[in-house]
Image (cartoon, rainbow, N blue to C red; front, top):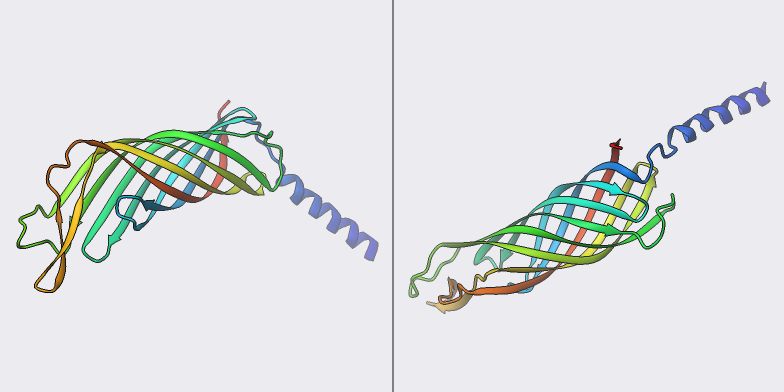
Length: 212
């Protein structure tokens, strides 16, 4: 009787393992995911936190693509609030074959469009200034990452990338008025400029379909 129970348990565990086997090939796999991103904007020197979503579409053992959207918020020392939205794509190159293993490292490079808005919470009175300023810009990014494969169909991904924006710059300056720190926008900074920052992203992704 004991041997029969062991055989039944072994068959049960075998069925579970077979159910978790990878049923997807390397090309044409569609993944959906959710992500959290931390951004260190060089211009403000602060830390922005964001959330978003993404989907991935693979093109073989060595190439994957990632299509994403993020929304960030950042507090500028209690004087202003910064909001950023990114929508873009990246190509992910795997230097090693994507065999089923715990870690799958990759190199990524891509492009995105973004929107930035800075709203003043404590504006200057002595220096007349707008209460908010906004811009649209374009950016490119490059970085490194890895998948942590929790199962054949489910992974946790972490990446770090550097993003460079090309667009009209937004400059703010702070000064004291009546002993209190206030903020205002600088004039004469409407020319095109480059702004770079680091992004750190953590995402959870699940394979949902084999498209071809």
